[in-house]
Length: 178
Image (cartoon, rainbow, N blue to C red; front, side, top):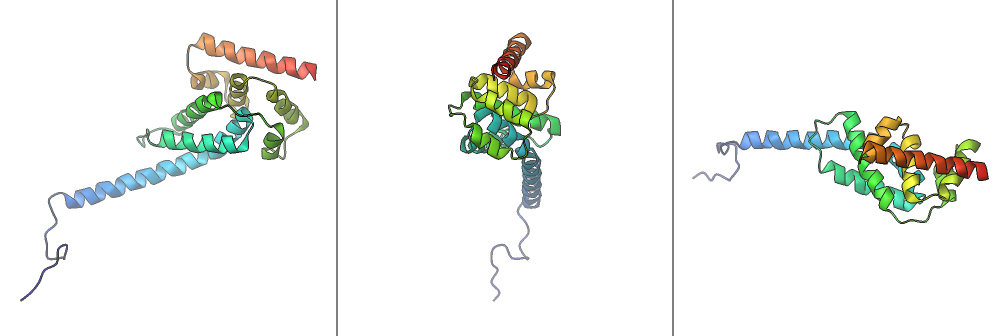
């Protein structure tokens, strides 16, 4: 008498089981690709977050939370530019809401090769409101054009353009007073 165990080679596959395995593998591979694409953006995200927030621990946490939040909304068909925009938008919102004390020493530690001009900029950021720091960090730390920064900031072009102009004016005032 022969016993047959469930799942043995003699058993025919359940209807569609082979397709499900393939779909699972495809989904897994797509997730792996998305994770790799997000990992490519982490350095840029951290650079932005530390400048905007001024606190290494808060910046790391915000980057991690932003990556996780965006990952769950991805379809896998996003372009590299769209992925970067989604990540920066999420992080921009988090950095504006974060209530952390700006620590210029921590920011400088994250940028050991900073030029004297960059060190002055970091010192100037310390005295600014969060929304201005986040706006300036988005514009300059990420190397975005004004139009790209405005798109990530959201809202009306006039309002976000005004915020960027105000932030630049505050930066200019801070650098003149030093």
